[in-house]
Image (tube, rainbow, N blue to C red; front, side):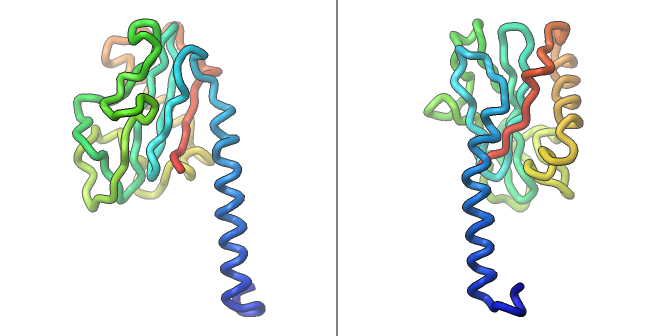
Length: 164
């Protein structure tokens, strides 16, 4: 197409694809089942959040894409929670309450736990399309290791949300 119609046609195609993506991503979020009392969490741009609901608590782990890192240290703060024990507000350190983390450009990923970054050969959108269950299983295992009883895990509420 670029050779036949030139740069202008290619630029129009890029614009249409980007515009379509901007329309589809908010619709994608609607497929995630969140606790009705909790505000819908906002995934970081240049990353995403993996969310799991256990009983009356929703747990969301922010993650950054390759080439990005968290804007503040998260090594000891793997996830944020919202539920009856938090008054149905997110435990985020960021102002606004729904944004759980920010992923800023960085050559090195060092502010978060090793599992808080999408693999080098992937991104949030790639993971969503091809290997979402791997990230969900990893997060569920991390919650269990921290002593959280995963017996009442609502598998229907499992979700990966990519930022945009």
